[in-house]
Length: 483
Ligand code: NAP
Image 1 (cartoon, rainbow, N blue to C red):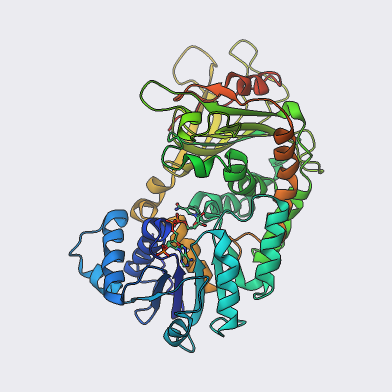
Image 2 (image 1 turned 135 degrees about the horizontal axis):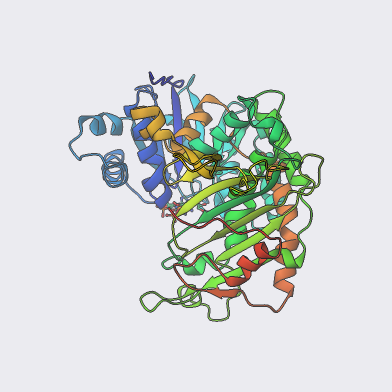
């Protein structure tokens, strides 16, 4: 299979927060890899901006160190030296007036202009205002904003309203890096480019759907930050909601940003309010080696969840009666993200004595080892009559696509290139984000009003016992968490 890398237009990309963790770990290494792949024109400019006083050379050295560390490239790789030639730096305090004219002077006419806000959301307004006020951004410029996009409906609305004062919706790229994952986009390809699944993709044939995002790490090191957020805000309102939308949405009329986002929005609006019995929250315990959640969060009274499991219902024709079970947590048995669609059992078995056929299951793995796996019933090989056995039709994208599959761009790389191309399909629209908060707000508020504590769970387990019961009471079971 021949790799098709289509170079993007010549661009000037300004990274606010270029000295920060995200820029070091994801943005700069991602840009480097796209440069090596031949997607970034050599005339393009990447301008770092942050308060730290340094010149271009110092920033190039800093960027090179980050790329060596996080892109696994050798220090003396000639492509690294070529890439850092694209970089420049302007010291700017988002809340001050210095540096903006210098930045303006660096922007070239005729190039695509993009501004990546890789800073705390509290600075989004300051940067937007100054970019517009100093005439640096115009109606063609694009801005990229990071999560978290608000912490509730009111703050998300305020953020949207503030950005809307200076930028049109078509200029705003709200990142949810889950949408940049290869498999997540493949969800749309599988559903809408094959005739095989779509006729079965409804409550008549799908028994239930499970979405799992499990992490092995705890919150140590960023506990007090995480404690203000919790699993619902950090994972469910954004990443898991996006996954749920892509599985549940109707076919858009075209693979076009607004057509896709319109359909996702309809799903969010069709979510039923959650009943109190449909949600389980957990907090991991200490395991003898590492502290438990409360200690890591430095808040012995914290009721913030490091784990949540929920049963979600979608009130529309397609999904009436098919629950979607979502769970995510820290310090779990394995690091894995997957979506499992369990189909209904055949209505009648003709194989009386040899075991009833089991339900088909389609598992879409996001990480590790992105791929798909469809469980089907076959005859067990050999003599002895018609005995049935369930086997996986396994497809790892890396195996199926060879070297090209193994070298897939990571989510950030793809999304940044989409910004330059002006394609918003994989970015959240303002009304989508608000609708997601409108659904999660009552869940969070009801919890804050209650006196309950999260259920304890052991590190390395699959979560609290209560979460198992959430499934058992529906005569279903969670899939095993394993990598
Ligand atoms: P970080 O490591 O704390 O970096 C913050 C950056 O902002 C630094 O470059 C800092 O540089 C700059 N900065 C702070 N105050 C500034 C000001 N007044 N004017 C201009 N620049 C200022 O944070 P981060 O982890 O990179 O996160 C950045 C954003 O991405 C946040 O919104 C975060 O929620 C989001 N995010 C991060 C990750 C991640 O993995 N790190 C993942 C998802 C989302 P100076 O001190 O030099 O000014």
